Length: 219
Image 1: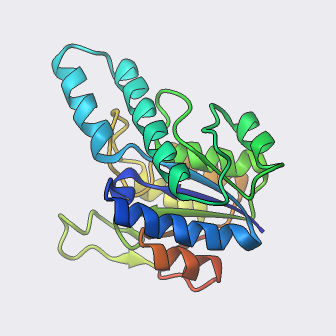
Image 2: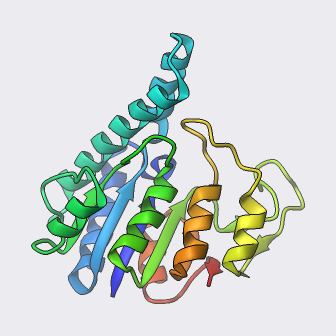
């Protein structure tokens, strides 16, 4: 199976022990599946983007700062993994080329205006992935932000068109932190790739690959 994993920066963190645990699990997955991982910028990106905005940078320039942060995080993960190519690809063509000689490929952002999720969804479409796993900081897609809306309901299963409708009000600013952004949802809809949205913990990745999804299934 060919799998693309979006590993949000807020999930990834910068704790060495956590990075090692993710790398261990990702190496296990890569033993049996061609694996692509797109890493977000997380706190590093948000801190630098906030400073850049204060200094007068445009949103597009802030996006470039975020992309640089994602690639630094990708390099950290590569440092810990045994199965990953020792290079961060700049685009999808390079990622696919690297996958010919490595069981896992780790990359960051590619283009301004594209979140980690959108980049990963596009990568999944480009490489013809069998499964797209979005590992985020909540345990699925909700009717509202569960951290702010007390009675928000988690969906166990959605059609791609329903996902597009639900996330349509999300922010598109550089560094925005949403469970799935609108562009990613539209890419999922047009590509038809089977998608799982799960809480980003290492053990949940293994469960999702085995089809034991505690989150939201989109298909």
